[in-house]
Length: 196
Image (tube, rainbow, N blue to C red; front, side):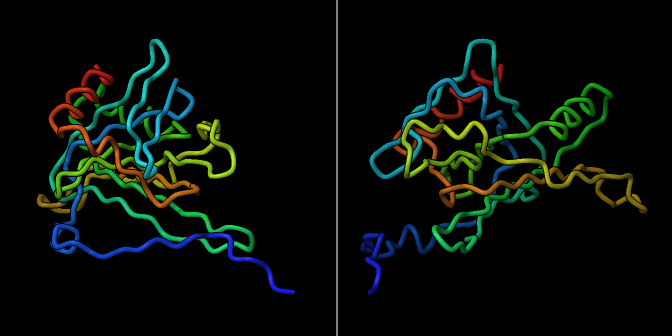
């Protein structure tokens, strides 16, 4: 006896906008902790359309240099359902002890999510997924965890002194667009308010 197909495939015809879309991640990004999410709303295509944080909680806002940050995902084949490893790596810079301490707080955190702006003008969120089997699951036990944090003084004057923070997590989805129907400037203003 054969088993049934469990997924309905969709059609995809790549547009010129999709084909010509540039790569890269902007220098600014936001990091939050999954347990701090009070509510999360997904659109009909799975995009994140709204998010609120619990009272007193906020996002961390980080800014560094252009063309230093990166984000990716890869499929993890499994017997019953494929999952996705989501990865975000940001390069952070410091001069003062307070700035170094802000990086340390990030390095000792877990169950994170990262909201990034791409060079193509899209906002995406890594570390947030939608459980296809249980809609009420916000995934506060899932998310991105620090897998590496490395920095140093370098050897020569031109060497970078930035700290690379890498986070990775096994998720149900590859990545989510963050509020794609909202103007980019409005989304950034909202995120800035959540990090103030």
